[in-house]
Length: 435
Ligand code: GUN
Ligand code: ZN
Image 1 (tube, protein in one colour):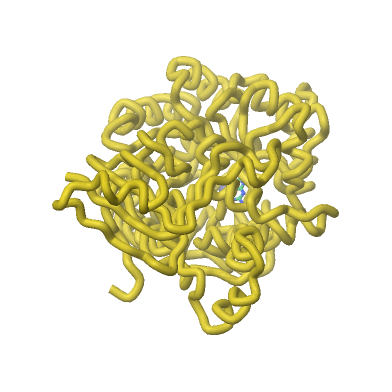
Image 2: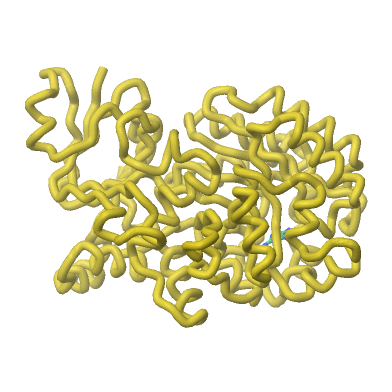
C-alpha cells in the first residue's frame, strides 16, 4: 500500500561544490513524496501527484515543514556516547584517559545493547537515518548495534574496531583474531536486512603492520565491503605515524601500502594532509568524514573541505558527528560547526554545500548514493521532516529570510534537535515530535 507525505521538499541532484547551487538542488515549495514497500515511488509537486493517488493512500501533510532525505552521519562511535564532553585533553591523552576505559564496558552484551538502543533512538530524534558506526573491539558490541538497528529497520554500517598495540591489553586483539572475527561478522551481518559491515582498523597507531596487512587481505577478499578508520586528525598523531611507519611517505600512504584505500573506504578527519595525500585519496576513490564539532572539541584543527573537494581532484566528503569527541547528535549543529571551520580556513561554506554534505554527499562518501541520501524514485524512503520555526526566535529570524538559501543557512546556524518534527525510516514514521 502506498503512503505519501506532503510539504516543501528539498533534495540534491548534483554536488554543489562542483556545480552551480541552483542546478544542484531540487526544491518543491508544495512537494510530495510517495512511498511503497519502503521505497520512494514518486517525488514531485503535490498538485501533480495528488490525482495519481488512489483513495486508500494516506497522505501526511506537514504544511510548514521542510522534507529532506534523512541525514547521514558518516563517522560516529556509539560506545562513546556516555563520555561526550570529557574535559581537558587532546586526542592521544583523551583516548587513554577516557575512551579506552569506556569501551571496555562493551564486552558485556547487555550493556552494549542498552547503549545501542539509546544511541539509535537519539539519532532518530535528530533525523539521522543512516550512519557509519565504530563499535568496540568486542564482536558482541557489533551484534548489539546491528540487532538494535534491525529492530528499527535502519540502514546502519558498523564494524568491530581492530587494534593490536598501543592500547590497554583488555582492548587488544591480534592480526588473526581481527581477521577472523571481522570475517565472521561480515558473514553474519553484511547484507542482512539493511545492515552493512565496515572493516574497521581503529587507526594506524593502534595496529601493527601485520594487522594492517591482515585487514588489507580481508578487504581484498570482500571488495564490496566498506572500510573506515581515522587519518591525520592531530599533529602529535601525525608525528607519531612518522616514528611508527618510517618507510611510508605519509599517513595516507600507510593505508595505501596496506590496501586500505579504495571506493567505500572512509577516513575520519584528514585535517593535516599534504597535496600528495589528497591526490592519493582522490585517485583511489576514498572518502573523508568531516567532523567539525569533534575537531573543535579536541583542539585538532580545521578541516578544509573546499581544498579537499578541489575540482581538479575532488575527494568525496561526508559530514559526521564523531561522537563522543564530537559534541552533538544534531546534523544541523554539525553543519553550523562546518561553516565555522570553513570561516577559520578563510572561505564561506555555502548552505547548499553544507546540506549536501549532510545528505547526498554523505551517501556518496559511503558508496550508498544509489540507495539513500536523495528523494529520487527507487531510493529507500528515509526522510527527515524539519520544522522551520522551531523556537520563537528562530521563527522571528526566519520571517526575515529572503530566499531558500538564506532560510537553510539560518536553520543550520540556529537549529538543533528541536527543529526535527518527524523522522521516517523505510517508508514509516519512526519518530514524531511531541508524541
Ligand atoms: N583516533 C583513533 N581513535 C579515535 C576515536 O575514538 N576518536 C577520535 N576522534 N579519534 C580517534
Ligand atoms: Zn572517530
